[in-house]
Amino acid sequence: MQLKHFVICLLLLFLGQNQEEETISWSESRKLNWADFKGEVNPNSDAVALTASGITFGFSVSTSGSRIVNYSTTVEAHFYPNKSWYDKERADDYILGHEQLHFDITELYTRLFRQRLSQLRINQNIRKQMKAIHEAINAELDETQKRYDEQSSHSINTEVQLQWQQLIAEELLKLEEFKSI
Image 1 (spheres, helix red, strand yellow):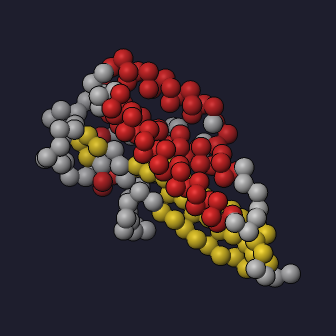
Image 2: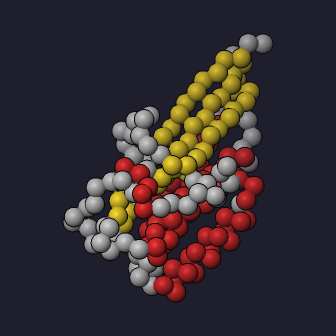
């Protein structure tokens, strides 16, 4: 039996992203700092800062003839320094905490993605199933990021900001077995 490997890599969030784009992978031990935000400040924005983060996803399938016999995946939460920015005059540690939570939310959905992928069983539709999970996770991530900003009024509502921090910490803990290294 001869195995052939097909590799399909899907990078998401930014169209036209190149392989050499600087990224920071999410890590429990490394929190964002203002030096990580290297993008140009948007002069037309009322925001104090912007975090650009997303999930990168790749998979490969092994085949025997035309039958899929195995698959593997890689899923990572990334921060994009050159697309992230902050207003030096208005930024502080509290705002940085708000931005870190955006990245933590990305990690949460990375873990959910890994969990859902781990539940798949090898079949001839596995590519379609992975793509469907990928699309669903991205839609859920986008909705949650928007809800977080709306409910916390972009960090202005400190009580709701704290509630979100607690919620995301609890959810990350529930999915600890799927965390990024």
